[in-house]
Image 1 (cartoon, rainbow, N blue to C red):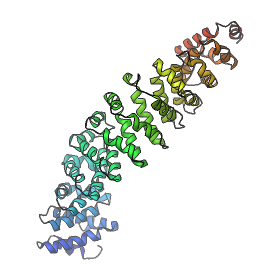
Image 2 (image 1 turned 45 degrees about the vertical axis):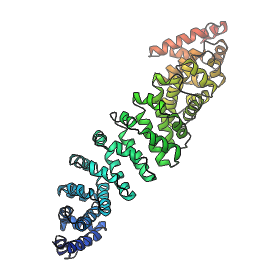
Image 3 (image 1 turned 180 degrees about the horizontal axis):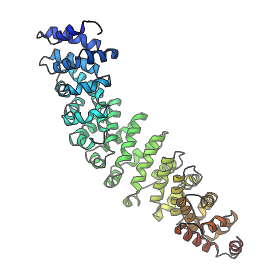
Image 4 (image 1 turned 180 degrees about the vertical axis):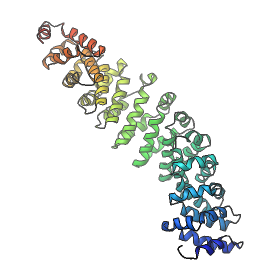
Length: 456
């Protein structure tokens, strides 16, 4: 490359003799495998200009070697701008439609190397690059499919082009690719669906186009952590759509979610908790939907030490706890210990939503002594002193409910619960004042408590 050989070599690449051109291009392709040569080739020898032109040659042997050379040069990001300026995309699209396997691989490699750069996406989309790229994942060659699928995943990550990607057939293509019997392709396909599912306009189409089937199948029949992480992310994202929250239940989402909840991976558990949080926010899913297995999966997630997972699981438990029948089931199936554990969490959000769930559970008279017997009073009284108004409010609301049970009243006083309640009467928050006053009213029904209240 540094010798005087490059100028005549590039001249020979343009020879009308196909064999001469092929061998000359092969030499350029070979030396371009060394990334240290790229700058000299592109900036001094102007190789990209000749190569992109020859990619459009009608001779297979010529455009095959030219595309191989270009795919090598594109391994250096600094060459991308030159490639685009030389109208390289149009030449690339032509090679991508070739029936020759080597050309298909070269084209897929070119796409793969320009796709991580977000600045290239606008040009790829605007010039019609999605269709030839989608065509490459349909080639029956795993090597070609993997490179093309990786490029599509990168483009799908661009929030500006998600809808266009789906509308031009990318969504259906990824759902089909997710059914392939190749782990790398499955990960890339589901990863692309995960990117697309971030768009509110694509959450519903993923379900309507049959995307749940291959995702469920991969969850239940594969233990690869990366793949399961992608699946969990897809399910959590699409569950944010109200219509999906209903249809996902009918399609059998609980089996995969319970399976994923048992995986000892924080990111998977976090997405499962987020998914269940969304599903339970729909009133139609709060009655007669959650059975013992689903409840226990929620309790397992609520026991997490990771903030997002524990918080969303507590929110989900609180959502289903609005139904009286669920209130009893949650307590009987073991839902109290993880909630009480989160009262002592270092995270304010976990404290708040654990209190919220316990408040709803304490609405049932049978649960009021259970919460106390499970050791919940100490944490609740302590949280009444919280600097977070929301935490203090919900903690006080729980104590207010359980204080209606006569057996709990002396226990609240014995654990020095009066002082924080009296302090809340001076809170700047009206709800805190009101709830504290109601709690003191409940406690004041006992003669001995009346004395303690006045003394303090």
